[in-house]
Structure formats: structure tokens, C-alpha cells
Amino acid sequence: MARVTQLVQPQLDQVEERIIKQATAFDPAIEGYVTYAIGGRGKRLRPLVALLAGGATGQINTGHVDLAVIVELIHAATLVHDDIMDEAERRRAQPTVNARWGNSLSVLLGDCLFAHALTLSTNFENADISRAIARTASEICSGEMIQTQRRFDLKLEVEDYLRIVEMKTGSLFAAAAELGATISQADARSTEILKTFGMRIGTAYQIYDDCLDIAGNEGTTGKTLGTDLRKGKFTLPILIFLRAASEFERERSCSLILEGKCDEVSQMLKNGAGNGALSESITTANDLIRSAQAGMKALRPNAHTEGLLGLGDALRAMLEQLRT
Image (cartoon, rainbow, N blue to C red; front, side, top):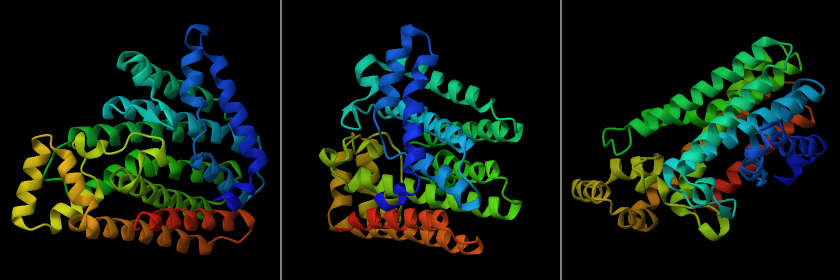
């Protein structure tokens, strides 16, 4: 991943500086909360995609930096809201906003971050960009609502899960790539190729995150794990496990989930009974990455298209680490 980020490191540094400065745009009474929510440096994958897509189709400029800041603020808003719903206590090795200040303030803080990101988007001269960002924010929220609506839904299918993931995660990666190309004034075909790349990479990344929730280590990840089952979010490894289980295993697992005894199901997923489900989920994510990379062959190659391909390779390596 380091080799990929080096391609746009100066611009990523600008993005980081700009993100931190956003707190000053808020009332002094809440500035500290905003700083806390956006100050913990994450992977910055969405800004990375926006910048690389811009470089893949033209010269990276200040518009791409603006876009990168906006997509990261939207992502930060979703994390604040996610942690509330999951009752998560740790993120990026520090207490979550809700763990420090409670749910009421955290809901409003997430709303403030969303609203500020949309306000920043109105500074683009091309109104199509701000409209696309607003549509993406709506898509993310709709995906989260559908996922919440279908918690503990034993009729949820893999296709339903993938649709939810595309809405709540894939759409922001897709927008970052598409609008990065739009700012570079790329042609419609190149823009669509990058949008598709972003959607597939983003969907694969969410599958990785869902596998990490089962197979990861809290000490390594720095965040609360195991929340999906406890909150009734049936992610891909869980759905595959239930689909492949014997009738007895399925009935027992469903009973344990509905009774709130999710730790026992988690152990089944971690142990031999669930290894096939985890492996199949990783394979599904890898297939999405390969498909995303194959679509990029239609673009004229340069260092930044190679960077996007390298991002896919890095994600595939992260997935493979979960098999061990």
C-alpha cells in the first residue's frame, strides 16, 4: 500500500491538513468534538481513490484535493453513526465519539459532518459534481437504513447483502473515482470505467471489513469487533455459513443469534465449521477485485492507473491474511 500512496503523497498531505482545518468552520462550542471525530488518521482509501482517478485521466489539481476532503468527511460521518448503532467502544485505538459523549450528541455530530461535506460540495463550479455528491450521501444513508431494517432477518439473501454493501460502501468509492475523473474532464467512457472500478473495489473492501469483524484481532485493528452478529447484521460469511450448514446447525445457530448468544456462533465461524464460509467470502471479494482490475485495461496506462491496480493488489493481500 505504501508504494501506492507515494504516488500522491503530496496531495494526501494537503488533504490531511485540510481535513484537520475543517473543525474551525464550526461553532467554537462544538469545534473540539469535530476535531476528535476527524482527527484520528485512518487509511484514507476514499481520498486515495479520488486522487488516483484524477491522475489516471489528467493532472491532479486543487479540485481533486477538495473532492478528497469531502469524501473523507462523508466517511467520517458514517463512522460516527455506525458506532452509535453498533454500540462500539473503540475505533482507531481510541474511544468512539459515542463512548465519550453519548448517543444524542454523537448523532448530531454525524449530521454536522454530513451537512458540512455537502456545503463544501457546493463550491464546485460544475453543479453536476455537487449533485452527484448529494446523491451519494442519500444512497449511503438509504443503504444503512435497509441494513438496519433487515437486522435479524433470516430471509436475507446474499444478493440482498451485496445490494446493501454497494449502497452503503461501494457508492462512496464509486463517487470518488467517478468525480475524480470528472474533475480531470475525462471522457464519458473513462469516467464510467473508473466509477465501476470504485464500486467493485469498495464492495470488496466492505466484504474484507465484514470478514475482519469475525476473524480479526481487536488489539491489531484498534476497533471493537464482533458487533455484526450481536446487532443482527448478517454479513457475507454469516450468510454463507448459514446456507451451507446442516439443518441442525442452521436451526441451532439461528436460535443462538435470536437469543443473543452470538459469541457461540462467532466461535463456530472462527473454528472449522465456519472456515469454508470465511474462505468463500474472501474468494468473492477477490473476484470483485479482479473484475475491477480487468476493467481498467481499457484505460491508457500511466503511473496512476498502475496505482489503482496496486490498490487492488494491496486489498487482495489484506484479504489473504485473513485465511491464516
